[in-house]
Image 1 (cartoon, rainbow, N blue to C red):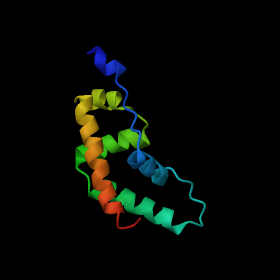
Image 2 (cartoon, one colour):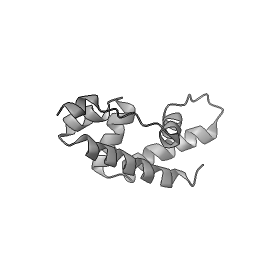
Image 3 (cartoon, helix red, strand yellow):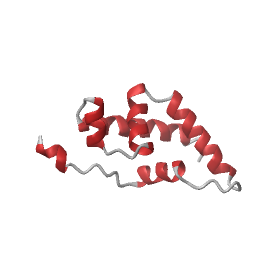
Image 4 (spheres, rainbow, N blue to C red):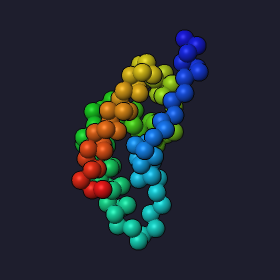
Length: 100
């Protein structure tokens, strides 16, 4: 499976940039909107996502693993990981759209 080694899994787009901006923004104490979005996002990750989506999102965003590493860890293909992250992210944005 040499294609797995060369596969680039970098999400480039507004969805990924927006999610990373919310997750990793500095909490300077003055921005209640950012704090509220972080709380909503954390709650949505725990309640709105399936267990597989939650695992993939947590490994990708919080642990900094790439999709090939996640696929190997979970014992699935990187295409399945990509689908889980994409669908999970879409579900998160549907929840967050009410707070943006």
